[in-house]
Image 1: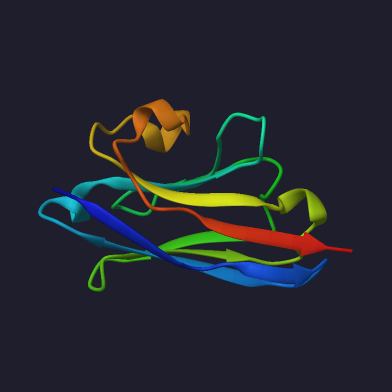
Image 2: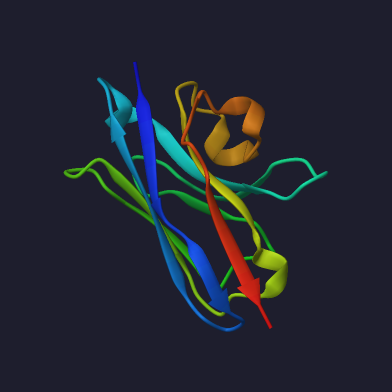
Length: 125
């Protein structure tokens, strides 16, 4: 069984930075693609960034150039460095692991099997 535990997040002013972390446990998780998603009340969960075990990366257009996804396989930890934050980046952020392999390219929540508990990011003017 895979377990994802998130840390980081919080409140920041616009143009500030935050880093999210997601530590994984469980066999085979190091073979999974992983990703970050976010969700605001009343809206669907959307993909923010995904990363494969070999370093392939995808970003949503809304965060490209500002956010950086990375993973430390030795620590089994996924990161999301968020810079130049905007109020519209405020959301509940989730990390996820994709057992099937499609999620890296689709960035669809439906293709991700395991989820972290979520962490709130709030960006104020």
